[in-house]
Length: 154
Image 1 (cartoon, rainbow, N blue to C red):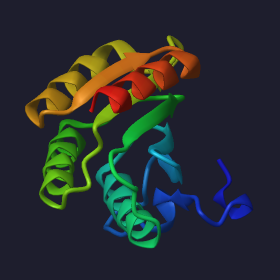
Image 2: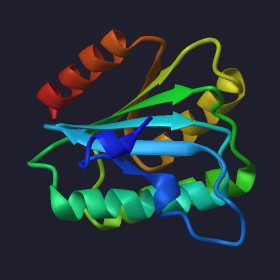
Image 3: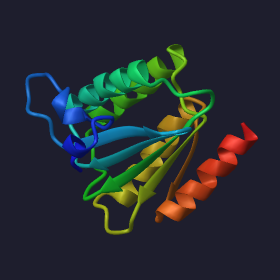
Image 4: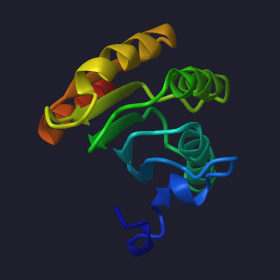
């Protein structure tokens, strides 16, 4: 993940502020009606806060045109503390209030990603609580197909 090669990409660690050093990395950019993210955990609160700032800047500079979806590729680890997951729920609520919520969210999470079986049910529950269409896949092709279908139905 190297955003220095593409000025439209944002890295959450560049925006993270807080008591602790950010743990994890999240890169975000837009590809038309799809917002792409690549994340490497485990994650702490500071990296999630940095993502919020990076996403706000991305949307301010190039807002999504109409309906959009997110595809988030998880690498290494998907682990996060209960505190981070609670803050993630608050983050989703703020996105809804600001009218910047995606139509659907697809995760790409290979079987080798640490914490996959533990964390995917938690993400599923949180997305459902915020009325978001969510699915997890092992391959990018599967995620892209699902996202295209979700955007077509929206």
